[in-house]
Every structure is written in C-alpha cells, then in structure tokens.
Image 1 (cartoon, rainbow, N blue to C red):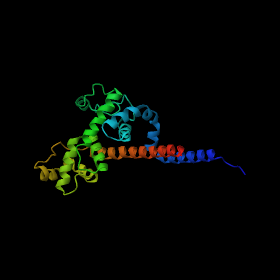
Image 2 (cartoon, helix red, strand yellow):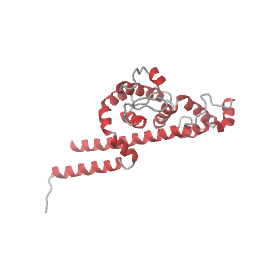
Image 3 (cartoon, one colour):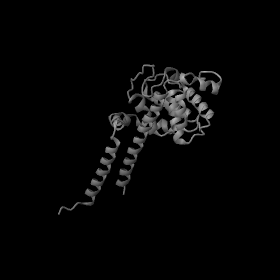
Length: 230
C-alpha cells in the first residue's frame, strides 16, 4: 500500500482547497470576467491598495469598481465621454484635480478620493448600505440619490437603507409627476427625471457581486497561506 508523506498530504489538501475555491470563483460570468482581468488586477493592485488605505476603503471594492467601469481598459471611452479605468466624466475629473484621466495613477487616485467623499455623505447608513448608496451616487449622480431619499422619507420609509432607496429611484421618472407634486410642489424632481434608474440599480448589484467574489477568493488565499505556516 502506497504511503504518503506528511508533505504530500499537505500539498494535496492545499491543492484541493485551491481548486474548490477556484471553481466557486469562476462559477458564472462575473467570475470569468474577473479571471480574464486578473493580470491587470495584479498589475494595478499596489496602486489601488495605496489609495484605498489612504482613504480607508477596501482595495477589493475599488478593484470591483474598475472591473465594472472599464474592465481595466486604460483607453476606454464611453459614449458619454467618461474616460479610462475609472470612467471619470471630464467635469468630475477636473473637480478632482485629475489632469490626465488616461494616466492610471491619477485616475485611480481621483476616483478613490471621490468614492470616499460619496461614502462620507451617508454617515447614518449602516456600512453595507452606505457602500451601495455611495456606488449608486458614483454611477447615477448624487442629485438623483438625494431626490430618491426625499421620496423615501415622504413615504415614511428608511432613507438610509439601500433597499428603500432602490425602490424610490424608480419613482423619479415623468410617469410619477403627480407624486413629485406632492413631495416638492412641482411636477419634476429637483435634479430632473432619472430614466437611468435601472442601470444604476444593476450597476450597484454587479459591483457588489465582483466585490463579494474578490473577498471570497482572497479569503481562500489567506487560508492557504495560513495553512502553509502551520
């Protein structure tokens, strides 16, 4: 009967853990996309971590944001004019002091600082909701989120919870102008109609899926490293 050394058993256990984690990691298109951009994640991880630490954000959240925004395509330009890794609009980039949005370090630094400023706008929200509301503001604009909060409060719901705001975003279109009259006294929200509400809701969901997958996989890596130190 074949006897295995302790070292061989350890290698088999590590390999099994790694493969199991890998299978869970790529179980859907989100995982596949993360796998495809993994070389870029490794390339930019030091820069992302630097600015994430500076602004007290999780580097994996910033990474998930970049995956959703540009797929780590440094030359990406949207139809609306948003540019580079973080898809900053020209006016936003200017406000953040980003002189060259195609300079990856500038783009990551500015967008991370911007996300932190959005996060700080919602101190009364629990952290998980706060992250989602900040992401919604990043994508849909702070003004529309503010309008959604006012509708949520008008309906006696919790404006600090993402689930409540997510439902209120739907009510920012022209078809709800009678509700707008009740809330504001005029038929249009202060920051205009928001026909892109569904895009923003899906945006938050996708970023959080990437973030959760990155957290899961980094947990697997930590477990393997801890096991190796035994």
